[in-house]
Image 1 (cartoon, one colour):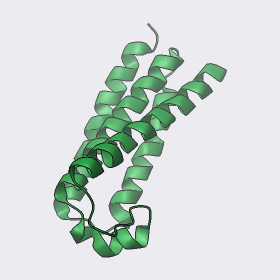
Image 2 (spheres, helix red, strand yellow; image 1 turned 90 degrees about the vertical axis):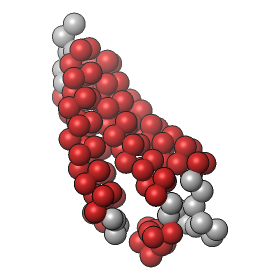
Image 3 (tube, one colour; image 1 turned 60 degrees about the vertical axis):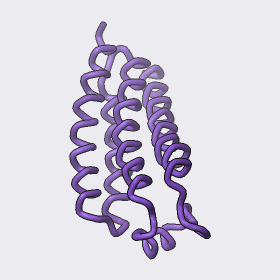
Length: 135
C-alpha cells in the first residue's frame, strides 16, 4: 500500500520534471519567448499565443508526451505489484494536458498533436509500466 502511494507520488513528480525539462529548459532555450514575455501568466499567454515560437509549442507537445511515458514508467517501476499508480499518474497528466490544450487558444495542429500525443504516450507508458509490474 505505502509502496503504491510512493510510486504514485514519485511518478507524478518525475512526469512534472520531464515536462519542465522539455517545455522550459529545452523549449525556451532553443526557441526564446519574445521580449517581455510572462510565461507564468495565463492571461499573457492567452493574449500572445501567436508570438510564441512554433518550436516552443512543439517542445510543449513533446514534453507532455514524454512526461506521461516517464511518469507511468517510474510509477510501475516503483510499485512492482499494481498498475494503479501508473494509471493515476497518467490520469493527472492527461487532465493537465487537456487543461492547457483547451484553456488557451491553440492552432488546430497543436490540439491534434496533443490528442495524438496523449493517446500514444498512454499506450507506451502502459507498456513500459507493465514490464515492471508483476515481474
